[in-house]
Length: 429
Image (cartoon, rainbow, N blue to C red; front, side, top):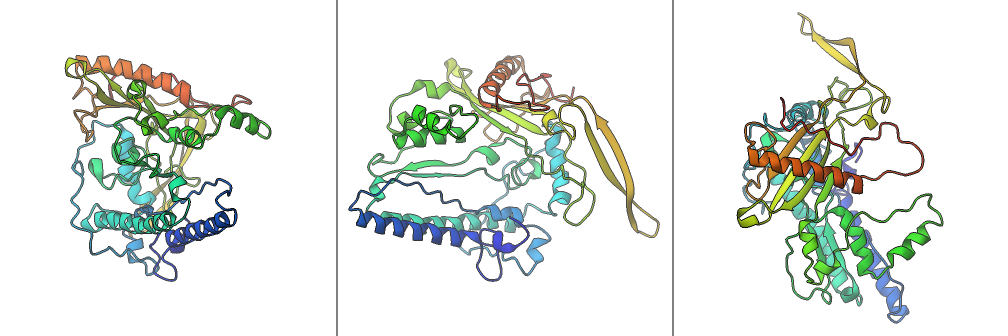
């Protein structure tokens, strides 16, 4: 976003409120232009695709003890937003979870800015949702008034969620694979193709969106790949699935048991100079803090009914070391407070690592534990039965990693991680 409030979605106190009002105006103007061209072409204008990418509710990431007091920001909350209680897991003890989570909770206050899970904070998040809904409504209203509305497929989704204080006071999206962060909306609308609204209970992923769009647009995948090969060094088939059979209410039992794979190497705490925006030293989130996870339905319920499981591997990725694949040198600035209360930060401590730290594992039965409070990979909650499931999920993760965590096949990638997880079976042994 940058430092300017004008780069926010709607939280600038002066001038335009932010980007979202501009984005909706631009899309509306484009729709009207396309409508005019369609009229000139007598309904035979070329097909088109528009991406309307709004910022909010991302402005919640800008809110904190510092920015809320700056006159350049306006974090006004709509009066219609009701009382928003804390998340059910807001006061959860996360000692049975991977250590990176508690580390991130502590580091966040110095890395970004001090932040507390308050009523104001939670109501602001929902107010930001309301604001972006209003901008989206403006776009959809104009679309409905065009001649090509019935021939337009609308897809609504998001890149990620927000922890909003859940799981012991975690914020934003990093270092976790909890539902609050990765379970996002996926809605498809067209009045002719989908005349009646319905919901499908199937595990899907962002990687499914591309093949689904291509299929809905009647674009031949093989021909598209051949066209891309003309000016791309490597072209690979999408790893996702075409979900059009589900859209058209065709029974696809194979979809029901297919796993989805999630991974993230986001590590914002590992800054170049190990200082925060105020110039104060910070320590990065403890390793392992890179994640890959699988979510899959297994016949582990009563009478072999399907239950949804999530298995997350926290690992130390050598690809992101200071010298990828060889060593990781970390220079950390240390501060000391003298008797005169002056703070000195002149001491630097260097550590060198040549081998990854051991993996840590997180496992949940989402059917029985939708709030993800019992880490079944920890001795406190593990049983003989869950240990057997854990062995299966470890194999599923390795298989999904090989299939979906793809890299260029030409050239060498220093420190490229293996798709063979080293599951120690229990955390913190």
